[in-house]
Amino acid sequence: MRLRDHVLPGSRSTAVKAVLASVAVVLTLTGCEHGKFVNGYLPEGITEGADRVTTLWVWSWVALFAVGFLVWGLIIWCMVAYRRRKDDNELPVQLRYNVPIEILYTVVPIFMIAVFFYYTARDEAALMDTSKPADVSINVVGKQWSWDFNYVDDQVHEVGAQAVLTGEPGAEETIPTLYLPVGERVQFYLTARDVIHSFWVPQFMQKLDMIPGRVNTFQVTPTQTGTFKGKCAELCGAYHSAMLFNVKVVERSEYDAHMAELKAKGQTGLLPNGVSRQQLMPGQEKLLPENARD
Image (cartoon, rainbow, N blue to C red; front, top):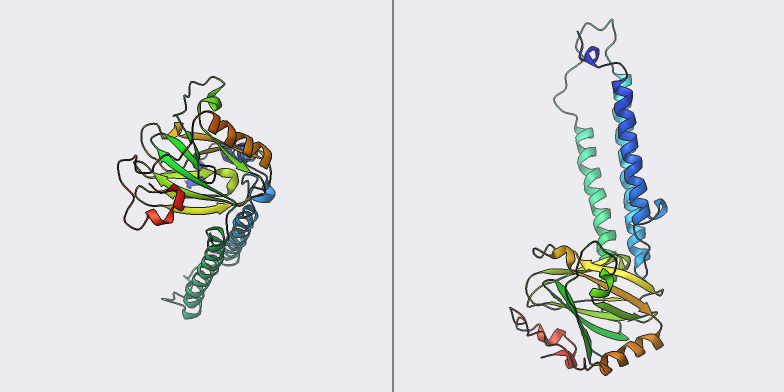
C-alpha cells in the first residue's frame, strides 16, 4: 500500500484550505496594522527618506519572487518532463557533475548578492548621511526603561518615566512625548545611560542603536504632522516592552510653544549624559553639539 492510500478522504483538501486560510488571516492582520500590499505592508512613511526604504523593500521582494517562481517552475517542469513512464525499465544515465550548471548556480547567486549589496549600501549611506546642516538638534537618551529628550537648540529637556501598562486607556499620557517641527531637518544624537537600546519610530522607516559610551547620529525630515508611536527595538531588560514614547510632528509655531512651556515648567538646561553607569568613551564627547557636552 502506498503512502497516499493512508490519507483520509478530504484531509488533503482540508489541509490546503487551512493553510490558505492561515495565510489570508496573516495578510489581513498585517495589512490592518502596518500598510498595504502595494508598499509591502510597511507602515506609511512620514520622512523624506521613507520612500527610499519602501522602494528597496518592494523591489527586493519582486526580485525574490521572480527567482522563486523561476526555480519552482523549473522544478515542476523537471518533475513532469522527466517523470518515470510505465515502460521505463532502466535507470537514466547517471552523471557525477555538470560543469555549465554548476557554474550557473554559483555565478547567479553571487551576482544577486552583489546587486542587493550595492543598493542596500547606497540607500544606507544616503539615510545615514549627516553632512547637511540640521535645523533642529535633539539628544535622545535611552535608559531602563524610558527616554530623556534634550532639545539642544532651546536648552530645555523632557524627563521620561516608564509606561504603566495596565490594559486600560490612558497609557499614552504617562510616557514622554518627543516634539518635532514638520518640514525641518532634525538631527538626533543618541546616547544610552545603562545598556544597549534602540531608537525606533516605525513611520521613520529607520532605527539606530543607542550604545553606552557612544554617540550615534542620524537625520530625518518629517513631511507630515500627526502623533506617532516610538519604542525601543533592542531587548534591554525586564520592562523592555514598556519603554515607549510618543512623537508629535507639529507646525513650527506649536513646536516653539512647547519649548516655551518646558521653560515655564523649569525644565531648562540639558540633562548631562554623564548621569549613567558609564561615561562617554574618549573621543565620543566631541560628537555631541558643543552646548550639549557635560
